[in-house]
Amino acid sequence: MSRISTHCELRYTVAERTSFAFAVLAAQGRRQRVIDERLTLAPEQPVQRVALGPGGHELVRVVVEPGGFGLTYDATVELSAFVAEVPPSVEVPFEEVPAEVLAFLNPSRYCESDRLTRVAERTFGELEPGFGRVTAICNWVYEHLEYVPGSTDGSSTAVDVLVGGAGVCRDYAHLSIALCRGLGIPARYVSGYAVDLEPPDFHGFFEAYLDGDWYLFDATRMAPLDGLVRIGVGRDAADVAFAALVGEATLDTQIVCTIDLDRTAPSDPTTAAISTA
Image (cartoon, rainbow, N blue to C red; front, side, top):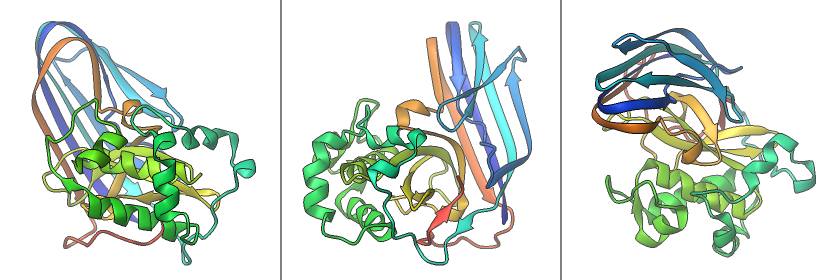
């Protein structure tokens, strides 16, 4: 069990009346508990907190008039991660996949698994199924992509990233997810906060459904798996963008800080089979 402190600040210049939807709140779940949190808006105004998506992550919805606007969120989160003594070796057969998991086998906006099925089968089809095969996918993505900020944008898909050979955290997750789905392994995108991430930012990683549970993976190797705090899950990043808006506003400042309160020194990225779902 560990306690993790998260902090984010978002400051905008709003040019016209704008409706925002923010996905920055740490999720509540059976293995992740928000001990305390504080959400501050400047200027203060009415806000809605609404559940959305397959994981029921909360959105902060607010309508802002022209001028300066800021959102600050602080939380202390307790993680009670499940760590498998023996990594799962079972990939659930299609006919046994629960109904609520089926959507994570399908192609999505950024994860065109139907276009990468042959690549997935040729590269990973002969490997033993389970945790080891998903780990092999992460290793392959890590080795074939270069982490280059600004190399992709909001239109870049898993195929684009594979061709371009570079991307950021969301792209590493999208390509990994697409390859998993191409092998018939349900996989979903997770947005969150990450301990030891440099530079500090929101982080994108993923989960694969193995032996009846969701297990964490991060092909970037930039943060320890036991230091990942969940915000939300979706088919890909389109479902859990940290901010969406209708109107006209410019993001002037973004500050994200995540600290493990129980760790005295940085740790290497964890390779154990870990679930916080």
